[in-house]
Amino acid sequence: LKLSCETQLSMTAVSMMQTAQKVFSLKGIFPAITTPFDDNQEVFYEKLHQNLQFYEKLPFTGYLINGSNGEVASLKFKERLQILQNVRQRVNPDRILIANAYCESTKQCCELTQSLASNGADAVLVMLPFYHRRSLNEEAILAHFRAVADSSPVPVVIYNNPGVTNVNISTQTVLRLADHPNIYGLKESDVANIAELVGEIKKKKLNFEVTQSSGCLLLQSFVVGACGGMISLPNILGQEVCQLYQLYRENKLAEAAELQFKLVRIDTLLMLANLGVPGLKATMDLLGLYGGPCRLPLQPLPSDDVKRLKDELVRHGFL
Image 1 (tube, rainbow, N blue to C red):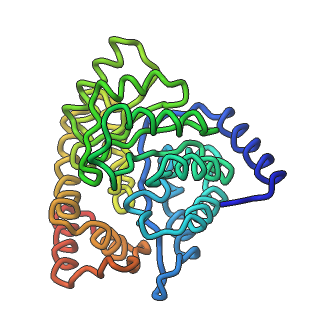
Image 2 (cartoon, helix red, strand yellow):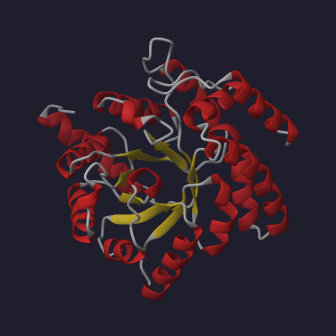
């Protein structure tokens, strides 16, 4: 994580200038991209570049780097920075890159956030530490996010992920954090939470955005006020997810609902059947992208599950 003082200052200045030139927004579709590995469990940068070459043909707003789908828990800090650098070098400069800054300590998170900003991140996604979740009262939650936002040279996006953390950040807590000048938005999956929060944001006239984290619930979330999606599904069906977003913007809700139904079938099979990242990568392989192996302890998808995925893709015309 450490760079020379001159390099650190120079790269931070460039990052801040780049961010200042962009209008940061969570509007639109951000794929939460996977991390390709080779058979020796090393990051396969050549395949990452190939996947990005395909993704760059699609109208994505940007990318989420090193998220859950990127197997962040299996990555070294050095790898997290190298992956970000590789993505930054190979995508359109206008793409907004959001890097996951998850760490279990606030101090580590602050340090990593600064390094991510120095290496090309336009913003960081911050999930609540959860190892000591029984001690995470509201004041601890506020202290963590505020400390990271205070130290970050780039915008901070909160990630409420109770499925992993087992802690649901309440709407009132999010609203208290939304007052911070460097906390720009929230990634959330619960449609009811999104509806409640968007209503309060409008009432208080806050400059704060909410994006959906589940492909199953995209259209419903747009209807209640979410501005976009930061999800896994565009790794495999990017054109269709972008089309859904555009149909909603054009108020073609019947067509959008029909497409959402098709996407739900695939997303449900991946997520609710617990196929997870191995399932996502297997689907990428089926569609001609590079999914490849996961890092241990994640196991390859059994052949029966691969067949289920293939049959579902064929049934809905995706393959």
